Image (cartoon, rainbow, N blue to C red; front, side):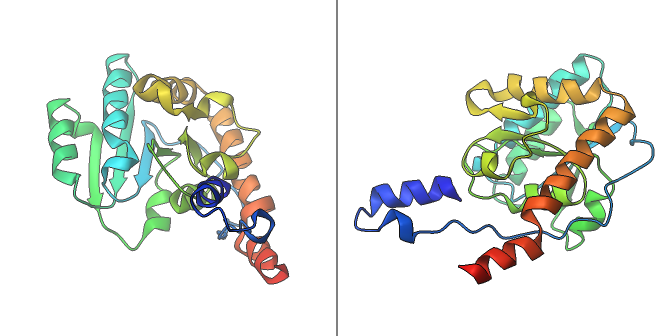
Length: 215
């Protein structure tokens, strides 16, 4: 991503800026974005390793806040990692167990994404997030941190609050999700369509491969 490129150039000054290219890996979008009713309670999902840099404690704290405000939701975490036990303990301590499913490692990420409507990426640091692009290609509404390479692949037509400034932490995640939880099905499907179209138009595997070949 461009963010990593600029950091690399600062550390290795003899590299020539114009000879370092940023080329994204692409994803294959669904033929059409999701249609029909949105799942209720709203289904949220993350797909990542359970590691500190993913910012998942902030996410769990945000879910507790939203549930206390009367919202209905269910969150599924795909993946495993060294922070898993810590996160499970925090989940239990926040009395979230009935609202959270820990799926662990799975090879059927596309199938799991089809069961959700909103993808969350509250990372504290990030390169080009493959999980985010895969989720948007599947037609999920993204809520993510404004960090690293995330803004580079972000759909500019989505509401501003879905891309959360890192310094806003838990409050920023709550704000972005509140907008979605208050929305009707038509609005959510519209945002999903925008995310899906952004991948189809700019980040599809076919388009990204074409750029690599041209370089």
